Length: 464
Image 1 (cartoon, one colour):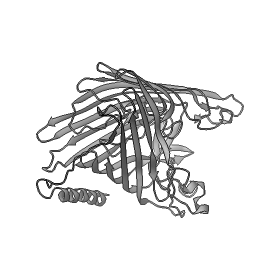
Image 2: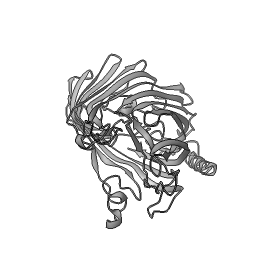
Image 3: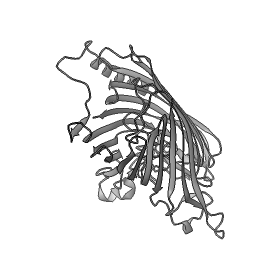
Image 4: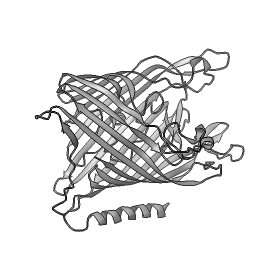
């Protein structure tokens, strides 16, 4: 583990040295970023802006106990290359009051996982497709109308104007860390489409108050309610609408809310201190059944969050800055509801519990308890070091997560340690991160803590 970490750090240092050769860039090369914008009028009030980005991961994962590879052999660790995100976003301001946003792409493609329907678990061995031909799908498709420009907007479509927390609507372009902790998207790939749902929303800013609220029709997900036969809550089909919102008080500099994506880190270009709170509710989202003869009991999903965000420069001459974010989530999905999730997980299968009593309760690869009934506290802190003469900079950071799910009972803690190397701010950066996670073995079909495992991830990130 230490060898891998040192190797990754040496790679970052080598890259930094390569970019910092000479004190200043050549005068005939412009390294600044200019948005790809097509102006539709002379004043620039009508325009089409295009953003595209790629995030590539090279990972070394210490797998959960009992994990098997694609040939069914036990695999204690795995190495892989994956596309975490590949996206295109188009913002069209067709008049000062009308806006259209179209956002499409893919997520999580590895050699064995296509990120859509083309996975090993759905007949790849028969078709020979494996991780190829991932599904290209829509992320955002919404229209926005300014009733009172800046103060009161309404929109509709497949949108990202989420409730619960700031991080529930976080931009994927400018994370301070490698990625989001995932539990910030409370319905991820369940009743949403990668953190988006169909519905209507209102948003705006009144003085220093920033707000967003929505009325959504969540996607059908789960089973028929009459089929529920467990004391552990499961998602069931329902046509009930969901409500949500997030209110945010901006103490210092105001943030833009033209688009729904909250900035992860401004790298010292703004002085921001915000406190926010939000919610999400969906009646009848899950169900339980005490026994085969008892009636089905439906449960209302409720998620609440409260957070604080600080991002500010320390020394503008040197370019130093700090970033701090902390959030508390309280969630209720029904009795003992819990979802195990693993990002870019290549090997979710495990050997039989009869073969190995320590086989992971969560599943194989990097699966871990992520979303469920209970409480989560998450905090992150980063420090932007003085910039080099060519404008590049390092930013070390750390995170800590406290989870206490009803299904498990005992609380757990985990952490991330990482380093960003900003070649051209967030437009071009390289990130190395080590992430720990709790591991649980299966005891009478119940989870029991069995230590921790982790993963090293090296990411290249470019957006234009």
